[in-house]
Image 1: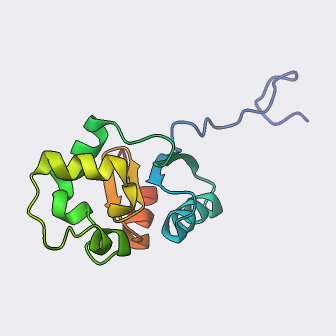
Image 2: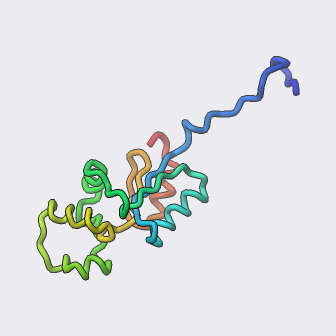
Image 3: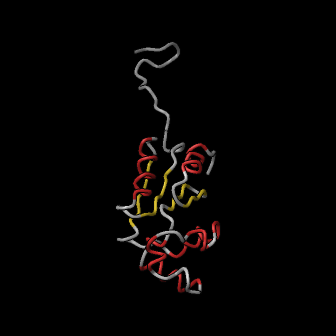
Length: 139
């Protein structure tokens, strides 16, 4: 094909999509329905995802602190969840360090999934913030 004004042997150019694409990290559990819903949501929109199964690899301290700074430690906990109630955490007064230790041992205490795209974060099943992650310019 020869287009007007193009060189005869010029190859068609494709726009580099890597600059526009958002990479999303999903922290959750493989067997969690909310984590699977987040994974499905981003896959349906052809977004590059990195799924971190918290049973196999706990979150790095810096990563969890990023979520704590934004939502607070209490905002990350699933206080209505079976694991939280069965662990007696409703009645215990624990320091933040003790609570982080329990979260590392049992990630089901968290309101999953924890999703990060650039500087944007979300906790739990929150499709509104997931959509915002995909449409926000310049993360």
